[in-house]
Image 1 (tube, rainbow, N blue to C red):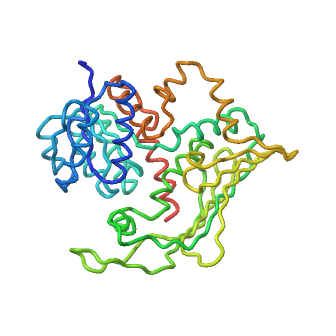
Image 2 (cartoon, rainbow, N blue to C red):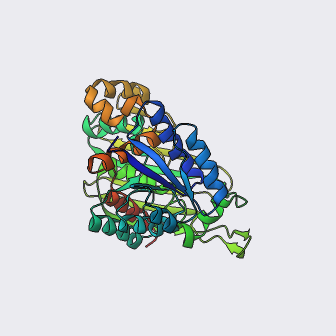
Image 3 (cartoon, one colour):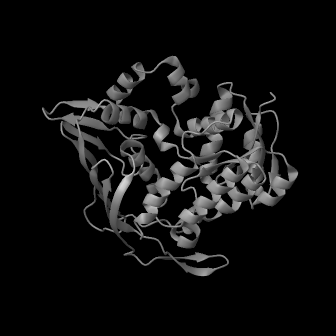
Length: 368
């Protein structure tokens, strides 16, 4: 196809495997608007492993590179899916954009607001696509619940929310993927910035922009890990926080969590309107892998599954294809499809760089 998007996957770690599975699912559905022409990782063996996995579902075996500079010099890609650790997002994305290569960047789009702006500005300068890889809002559960609560106002006018949890769950510092996440220079922050980026996108998706935010963040447990080249490294990210939000709509809410709370754990995610409440069981990834529900004034309930069925009945075939292409309901598959389509048709992606920046800025405000 003349409009085939030639993709490079930059970073071949854990989250890249989720993206890879998304592209594989698309190819298995017969979607051939893309080819993965290259993979890039500083560890050549990881790149080789990815190339072999990709060759199982497409004809061409991707070329393997160990640097973005070498990748761009080879001119083998028109778009790049950036799946590196947070500190590298702008370091990989900006050179790609400067070379005219469209990018989708894993959340949080940049390690800081400034780094995020650099990515967006580089894209605007070259007229390139800049997408944020946000999968949570694309699951059928979140789309359906937003329809029920925001569009249909099933629980009336929204008033307040309480999303709170505590646990004793120290991070496993023996894992490489955890080590960089507890070092602020590499991650930009702890759970507020990591999984919290998903939650910030969700509340923006549901409730719009925030007017004011007040927060405290703490690091109660003093942890460190042994690094092969840096020696003993101290964890420098938060393990606990309490934040209050006031949205421009007037909605108020509390979001708090601690993984350093020994003893009795608790967890709830409750949103209240004038006619009832919305509940989920996950503090960061709403309505993806847990069963949410609505409870009304009279005590009657409506399950997430029932809401999903009702929501799907409202969609035309064209809308279903746009929101759930080829019947796929996995958020990673859908975000990958949306990126390829945006590149092929030169249209705005569903979650662009500015959306990623606004969610990221909400997380960062908790530290200020």
